[in-house]
Image (cartoon, rainbow, N blue to C red; front, side, top):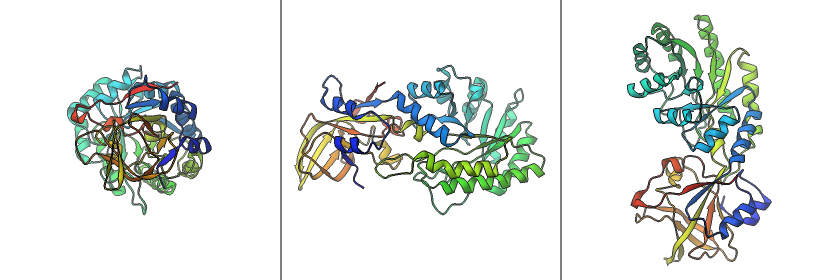
Length: 389
């Protein structure tokens, strides 16, 4: 599917929950806003949060701040009643700035350096994730505080998410009970189970399979005398970029049914959405800084590229919808970034109307895994945020 849309397309099919058409038209024409700029909609953050909560009513939301740690998102999640999933000392400190009690956070990184671990415990985080015996050994240093430990497991699936997070983390199903015993021997509390199918997962059945596996593990743990208090189903809920995905209520319906059917009421359920909350509320506005006809293609050079906001194309394997207010005949074109590196090409072979130097191009759903993974290579200006509402 082509990633190109014009303003009329957006009016006919509002495919992303971001700035409205009137705002986009204004941004294309305003010259008091320097590009590149990221336009964030506070209200869209809240809408995404509420939509996911309605789709999965049993799962308390712990926003995973790694895809976008902007203070506005953290504050809005807090205002909506959400909690947080953190993976580092820096993330703990960012969330704590909003007045969030670290005791309400879950530290979901299965591998923690001792300084990172010490910082988290010292701040008051009490809920942690492990997936191997070496990590359990680190618990021995915390003799004054009893920690709540969740074991992360993985399952085999016939289909995978765009970013397969089971490749790097998660123990086998058979390793769960031995790890629970090691946690008990350490003097800390086995508290529950977690899994993470992967990021941008479009297969609800993978969640359902993991939930069924969790039920079998809970039964096995019951027989061994362990009280499972928590099931963390991770995140990975899909966002519509250039390919359609089911509405979140439709996508989550089989997951919600599986939770009701297989996980008893006394067990708390949490989810760790990151992308679903953060992606669509932000739109990138970039400027055309140069153009050249090269080998039969019109090359347009933008003031943002792969080394900055479009780093998500490399690390997150995403494509972002391109929005223009220009019309006319479409010609074979290239969108390239501003650096002096020939690798810095965003789209090659895109059919575009004629653009002029100084024109603006918008890119939808650039709120997740974009700004956080970019750099200022060539000492170029990084985009700043404008909060739209």
